[in-house]
Length: 352
Image (tube, rainbow, N blue to C red; front, side, top):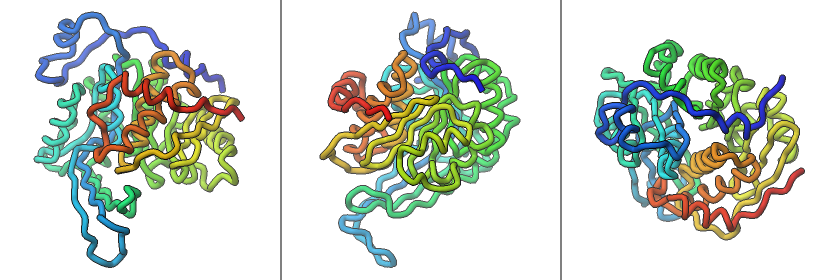
């Protein structure tokens, strides 16, 4: 199966804009862009998870079956929202389409999206509750256990993809990003529409339980981001050694991807080429939440600017490193200067 290179797929011609959503009080996309003048950034559309993250962090080592002293933090999160936020902070025009309920949690998500300049296009179900993610973190910031209450995403079916608003949002995007919170049939429908319009689509794994939802549409994805546990779930087993992930994922239909491995070098592949990309040593880890999403967002940002995957992923490592040092899933102080400064410290990838 022929696949264009990521550079060719991501460097696309400008497309007409259409539709209407909200972005910092703008009445329509056309009105807002007329005021901003010529476009200097890519247009991204993120579809998927935007919910409320509630995280508790223990003051000491977590002890199962016991009360652990610690503190709570509650903020808007979700892979699609986190990726969209980082892309917007880096100066891109970003739309977000995400299911949510008609409740206070939904308003929290809306406020967070507006706060970073995202053009928020919610699909609101008044009789449903906005999704929530509740996590318990150890004192070192690592995840001990989490519970995801995300039933609302299951009602976001493939018929939504046929609605005019979402059709137009996809057609006017340079790149579509989806996460595995959405149902299998919905992801497949989005991927088919993007393929028909020659719009590259990127995928975010989210969790081992959900990443398998990409199996049906893997051949239509331009690039996928996942950690090793998610890669193992998608492939049906672990790689004997990290360098085998590209072959295993290619067998599942992916043409390009990134497998992050915590503090170990990430594995990158595109076609028959593959690399190992080390992270930075002795980094500060406050909270691991959102680091993978930051990695994906910054990599996609640089892919859209014409960099090859191996080079673009250095900026992904930089964004993840900056995010790990924050107590929040998105570092709101992020800008291009901070990203470039950190990326300059990241070693070049080693081709295998």
